[in-house]
Amino acid sequence: MTNSSGILYMLPVPIAEGSITDFFPQANAPIIEQLDLFFVENIRSARRAIRLFCPHKPIDPITFIEIGKHADEATLSEAFLMMEKGESAGVLSEAGCPGVADPGARVARLAHEHKIRVVPLIGPSSLLLALMASGLNGQCFAFSGYLPKEPTELKKSIAKLERRITEEGQSQLFIETPYRNEKIMESLLAHCRPTTRLCVAQDITGQEEHIETRSIAQWRKKPISLAKVPTLFILGA
Image (cartoon, rainbow, N blue to C red):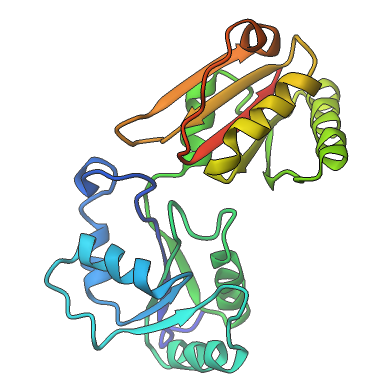
């Protein structure tokens, strides 16, 4: 790291509607206030997040660099040249903590390659919050992102996750798009062993938060209707 280089701040954002004072330390806002360079998934939602933390910060002078599938390599390189000369920047996810199941990881990796210091700030992570509340193994766990949509491949993936639970005691975390919550739940109830435990964590930190862990056998006896809200599923022993 060089003394003249800027700093890359990994900036968590809300994962549900609510007051930022409930989930973010006061130290975050002054850091965001001083930044005019941001790596973001979506410019519109990034503007909204900045206004939430810093209502009086001018938005027009800010440079936003998109980091999704269509990120421009030349623009990224130019941004890191600015940082090597002393400009600090922030990474904003669409929700939760950047760099965790998120394209922000690529930006953090590039920062390390450019010898730029990376500083993570405190904020909500749906993965950790769900795991904390689940009662499942929090010492050995893995996050698989989205499971396959195709039924045969989905069945294979569920079987693979259950093998990891049996062989390693490893809790298995994954997500689904809200409109497919019911579909994935149906598949889990159809293919998982009765003794496997399933945590369903919906709308974490939100007004309709619901986190519940039962065995598959218990879920089959008394299923629930899943809302079309962000949901995290955890399978475990």
